[in-house]
Amino acid sequence: MALTGLEIYKQLPRTNCKECGFPTCLAFAMKMAAGQVPLDACPHVSEEAKQALESASRPPIQLVEIGSGDVEIKIGNETQLYRHEEKFHRPTALAVRVSDTLDDAAISERAEAIGRLVFERVGTRIGVNLVAVDNESGDADRFVQAARLASEKSSLPGVLMSASAGNLNRAAEALAGHRPLLYISEAAEAEAAASVAKDNNCPLAVRAADLEALAELTGKITSAGVEQIVLDPGTRGLKPTLEALTRIRRLSLKGFRQLGYPTIAFTSATDPTMQAVEASTFVAKYAGVVVTDAIEKWQILPILTTRQDIYTDPQKPVAVEPKLNTVGEVDAESPVLVTTNFSLSYYSVEGEVEASRVPAYILSVDTEGTSVLTAWASDKFNAESISQALKKSGVEENISHRKLIIPGLVAVLSAGIEDESGWSVQIGPKEASGLPSYLKNQ
Ligand code: SF4
Image (tube, rainbow, N blue to C red; front, side, top):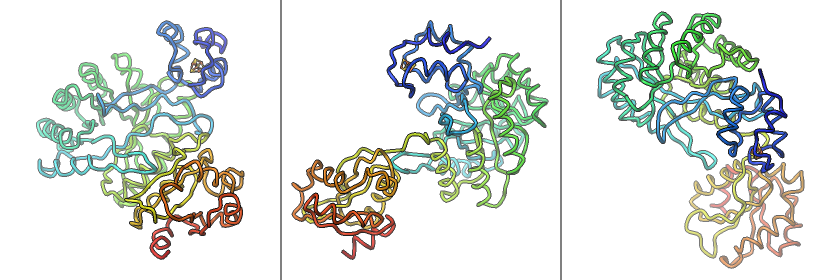
């Protein structure tokens, strides 16, 4: 039986340290009783309390771990349908497919390219997480060789995909210790694949014709001793897959245990743009793993950008440290620009200054992580806050001029800043993209 908020509260440290994001332990306990936050959001809960709270802390969606060591990925354990209720915690793992029908050289080349699909966006490294080896050949030896090559050349954890439990066993044994996700595409082989997953200590993804069949299958797999399951609703194409992923999420959050597992979705479009569109949609709507043939940077970056946006906390602006930053080899003549400490604003400015190749100072003012216009409208980015940040930064000691470039969107602040700081203000472009030509021409 589910525990009440007060019963949970009694097991918590009751220090009200706020590290879980809630103001008090009682508030946390109430949310947990409502199934809206997992127990592991409190880093201070004791082992005894964990055991006592086991039933209440069991997540509506099972946590599944893929890979091992530094590259281990966790999916599932989500508690909400809408991210404004509670942030989504475990980002979708993106997998790029490699067929074992390719020859060794082509597999190596593709796997290396997959391993290089890493980007830096708003100060964070984002990349492809998994290499999915597809046993299209149906041959066990070929599958083993492809799995070995893909793992070695990409340095990523694997998804091993086959219609044969026997072939999965061979490949899982070849990657012993790497803990790949085993994907069995043939429902009739699912129970045999469960034995393989149990013997090799791997999570198992299963496919069935519809959700009823899938729910029946998960019962059999858990009876075989495998708890870490990933669900493929069997749909292909954008609309049916989106519908199935949404139904699984809704049902699992309502407590339907047989579907309380993360999901796996496959892009099936042949058009390269649609591959990226499908993958991004599945990322936005609940897929735990997305497998795609997309491999071009222009396809992967929008998918990863969608993921980064969906999995940030909408209640907490993403901020950079408010401070004086430098780009390039600055000297006493280098220009000084000001922006807010909203990470997207800051990194947009920094990226464009880098592109201009004009060494410059960028002062990020503390606006609690809000963008230029939002901060201006809420009076956090004003003549006083900018002047104070200028003074505190100490930039005056490094330069021979007193000229400040402000965003064109807040040109109205120029007179106030000049009065407050004694600096002369220059109005920069309204968009960061205008900075390279602005800096070169000034
Ligand atoms: S992190 Fe744990 S101890 Fe701290 S307030 Fe939250 S529930 Fe209480």
